[in-house]
Image 1 (cartoon, rainbow, N blue to C red):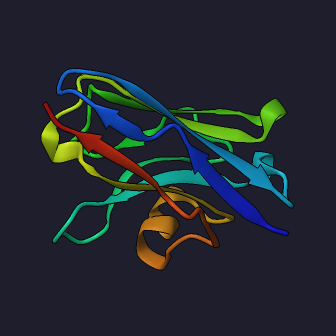
Image 2: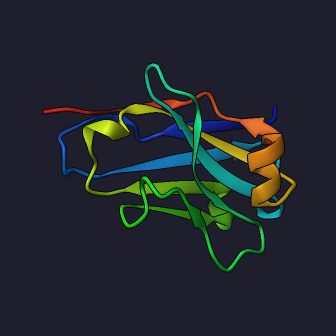
Image 3: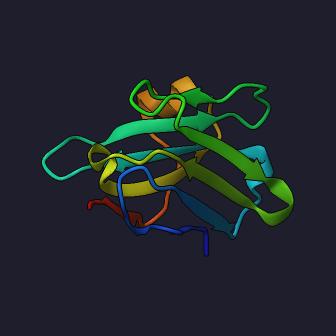
Length: 124
């Protein structure tokens, strides 16, 4: 019953915005580090952003810094990724993830739970 379910992906024109949501089921997100990953066609999976359960600061990949923002709403058991000024290079399947470890641990060891992914396509 432990699940992460992403939504909010779709087709958007360059310069547009999307807000991805990830709802946790079967566990309480409050106690978990949350993160977003993406995998573009022909490329390796990359970390996009991460936020610890007690972090004051989020961790943002250089490729999306200034454009993407991670946030969470523990009351809704949901993590978000606000994506602005989208570029064709952002086209990928986006995955949310959760882990008991810190953001560096998530990067090194991988998360405990993965969502199924949501497709984001940026194209004119």
